[in-house]
Image (cartoon, rainbow, N blue to C red; front, side):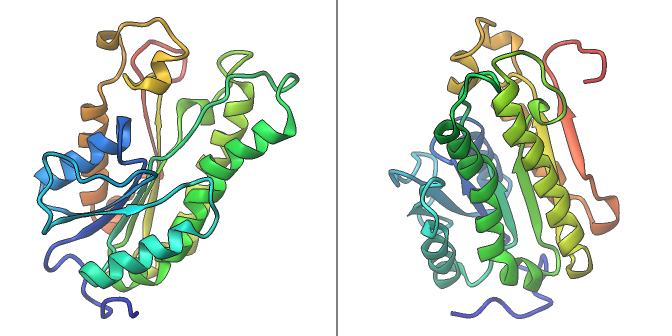
Length: 241
């Protein structure tokens, strides 16, 4: 299996890998990118073609962020199907709401596995194709919890999301000369099942996943010399965010 020829760049139809694509932010991103012309490779624990999808432009693959090695078959299958990868949107993530004192190593390790190590492995597996694109793009779905620790029970989650932000910066440094740009997208409460489990805020008072998807689409379209390292978005007033 070979990556597309160097210089393929943005000519033709761009291909994006989206993890966590079965629901929430990942699903919203996938639909928005499809509607704006992208070809998609969607990673899901239980693969199912979305009802809005065209099977010619959208393929689904089994992928479990908690299982090291599952990214390899997904990436290889995408290259077989489309012969290129131009973007990776790593949106799979979990939150275990425990303080840094109460959490045990098993739960902390699981958050690191899914929120940090899995996106690193996915980007690494896609690296040759992202470089061959000459306009490779990486979006790491981090969180405002990767910028500040807002509450006691957010503390352990914040540790993993601070690391996710650092991962994005590390990818940006490693890929700059290859035309790869990476952005850590850091939202506050987004109207998804994850947020609903930890807040009683109404959906109307949280960021809409579709709005976040439009922002991610914009970030993917920016040229190399308009690179955004971090993008923070919030549904409520905070001192800095």
